[in-house]
Image 1 (cartoon, rainbow, N blue to C red):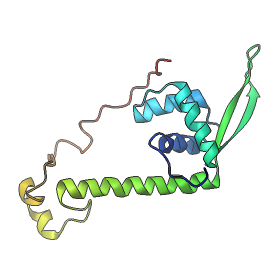
Image 2 (cartoon, rainbow, N blue to C red):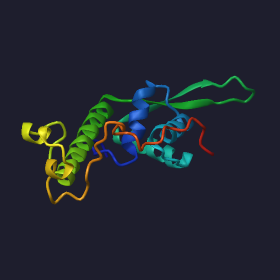
Image 3 (cartoon, rainbow, N blue to C red):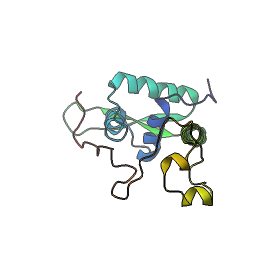
Length: 158
């Protein structure tokens, strides 16, 4: 099972595992997925994903120290492996190429590579291909992220 591509859920989970630098555990990953990706998932789903990443050789786990409360057990902590880092880099690259190709198909141009004639044109219909179904919103008062709701800092329901 080693050397396989990352799945839809494996990419963000592995990204969080890398970001936490060896201190990632199930509930923390669940919280980060909700906070940053707006994905509310069951803890069992996340644990299965972590086990899949371990089977592929992209992550490894170890038991942390017991928690201070009476009867507290240690958390299973995950860290990314060298193969996992390579797979994550490849997955992120694949995702960025896919998104760029989607923009090209929808708008008829590559991101950041418009010609001088297109830059000088002010009308969106003239700037992008006539067959594009999406028209960009160009307003000096709105940023590209104006329709995005800021992340909620509340914890997900468990």
